Structure formats: C-alpha cells, structure tokens
Length: 197
Length: 269
Image (cartoon, rainbow over all chains, first blue to last red; front, side):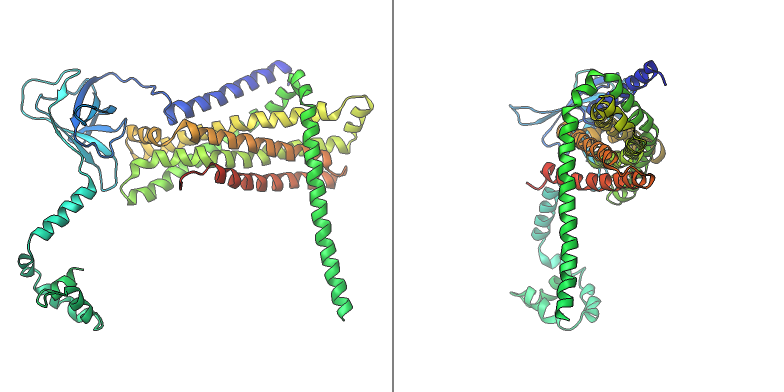
C-alpha cells in the first residue's frame, strides 16, 4: 500500500478516535449540553425537590412533555427553583399543579404536571403557582410511625384479636416467654405486640 | 536417605532460584530495552511515515474487531443490566451502568486484550521472523540501527493506537447499549442519556479510562517488541515468542488494571 493511502487511513483513524473522545466528553460525560430542542420554559418552585436531576422528564398524564433544564436554590426563600422546558406542542392551563413524583420505589424522579380547568394558558417564562414537593421517604416513614404510635392501642387490639390465635400454635414454645417480655409493662397487651413484631 | 532428601530439596531450591534469577534478568533486560527504544524514539518521529505505517497496521486494521466487540459488549451489558435493574424498578439507571462499566473498565481492558492478540502477536511474529531471517543483522551490517528503524516505530504505533481504539470501543459500546435500551427495551431516551450524563463525569471517569488505555498500550507494545526482538531465531522460537506475547500482555493488562483501579478508587473515602 502506498504512502498516501496509509496517511489517509491513519488520518481517518485518528479523527475517529478524537471524535470518540469528544463523544465521551460531550454526550456521555456532559461537559456541555449539546441539544437545544425547541420549546418554551416554565418555572416552578418547590420546598424540596428530593432526588430530581437535570434532564429529568416532565410528564403530564404519564406522557413525557418536556425536560428539567435547570435546578437552583433561591437564596432568599430557600426554595428550589426548577426550570422546565416544555415541548411547544403542549399547552398547560394557568392553574396547573406541578408535583415531584417517583416512578417505582427507587425509580427515576420526574416532574408531573396536572392541568386544571382555567382557560388561560401558561406562556414562556411563566411560573407555575401551585406545586407539591417531593415526598422524602424517611419523613414519610417517620410520620407513619408517629401516627401509628398516636393511634392508641385499643383500636388495634380489636381487629388484630383473631390474629394472635393463628400464629400462636405455629410458634415454637420457647417464644412464649419472649413475647411476654416484650410486652413488659402490661400483661394484657403482651400478645398483640409480640405478633406485630 | 537423609542425603537423598537433602539433594532433592537442593535440586528444587536450585530450580526455584534459577527461575527467579532468570525472570529478574529478563525483566532487567526488558527495562534496558525500553530505555533503548525510548532513546531511539526521536528517529521514529523524524521519519514519521514509519510510525504512521505501524499505526495503520496496529490501529486501523484492528478497527473492525474493536468496533464490533465494543458494540456487542455494550448490547450485552444493556440486556443483562436491564434484567437486574428491572427488579428494583430502576431500569432508568441503565445508561449509567453501561457507560460507567465501559468507560472505566471494560473498554480499556477488552480493547487491550484484543489489541494484544490482534496487533501485539503480529508485531512479535514480524520482528521475530526478521530476526530469524537475519534481516535485523543485515540492517546492522548496513549501519542501520534496527531499534530505530524497526522497533521504535512499532512501539509508538501501538502506544498511539491503543487510547484511540479504547475510546472508539467505549463510544461504540455505549451506542450498542443505547440501541438495545431505547429502541428494543423501550427505556425513555432522555432518562437514558440524562442519567448517564448525571452519573458520568469527564474528569475523572473518562480520563481514568484514557490513562488506563494509554498504559495498556505501552505495556502491550513493549512486551510485543521485546518478545520479538528477544525470540530464538528459529521457527519454533518465533511461535513461542508470539504465544508468550499474548499470554504475558493479557496477564499484564489484568494485573495493571487492578493496580490502577486501586489507585484511582476513591469511593469508600
């Protein structure tokens, strides 16, 4: 093979390689965002955005209608200010509610839009007035436990009354004293508590 | 009987000692060889067409196998990753999984292994055969240094080709992963790229991969030219040297990969 052909092929090879590095840098590593899809921007403020990331989906009725373009903190109000880029073909009413949702327990976090009945539509640069923050799982669990503790035991006792009888025969005998121990202070509640555990 | 046992023990100890000293001497020879190659490297760049020709043979002709394997590895990663991630309802994370696995580990290592078997063995065989047919000796007779004329261009051809091949492997692997994830499985395209961009940083993820591939390229090229230059000048010697190139450079890639990953690892801290 003559020299110029080799030069040409090496040139193509090196260009391809540099192209691959650029691809890794720009498209994969996100040094610069390349795409500038047409659409209009809306602003939504949340008390807590949870795990929302840049370029997360904006969905209405489960359909992807846009992307999260910017996330920043307002230093005055300590609210998270998100910029949503919505496809131009979709219009939303003025009283649209924006909420932060999660698909699945550990899944992707996205912004959900629920349109209302207003006749006026949101325009470029408008702010979505009604928002619903992300539900932080730890807070929810804490709240749930707290509520459960508040709902005093007598209420629980009645619906769970048949249950203690069912597991009891299955339980091996050494566990009997254990459940009483956990019941501790009051003998009457010993059994249901042991079952709950 | 005791003398018999002592003699046998001494025999095995002597063999062990010989193996170690032989290995160390060879390693030292290899290191001196590397210095000599580096010393003669300016020649490889002054007469750049020699190096370009080696980049053509080591890099351009390896393109097909590298791109094909990259694509298939990415596709398989995507399928397998989806199976597991789906269980936790986080199949949107597939982009991160494919990109990080490829960029950090798989692209440099697999491209290095393929490069060792595709190009490294060829370099060893070529130099070994040149030695067997006394072409190297003839060059020395004509006052042409074979290190400058034959070895250095091949070494640098490999060192330059390898990072480019690994980057192409990554890019095509991610493209293959994309092909399976988005059109085939139906993961949201924005989530695929968005999660990937959120989880992969150019610095240090991509640069770590580039550093790794550069080191692998240098290791494979050095082993290839050294084994060729050091081979016994017989048909059998050349075949042994070629086999050794593939075995040693594959092991070197895996061992170096572990060492470099251990240095680059900062997750726990």
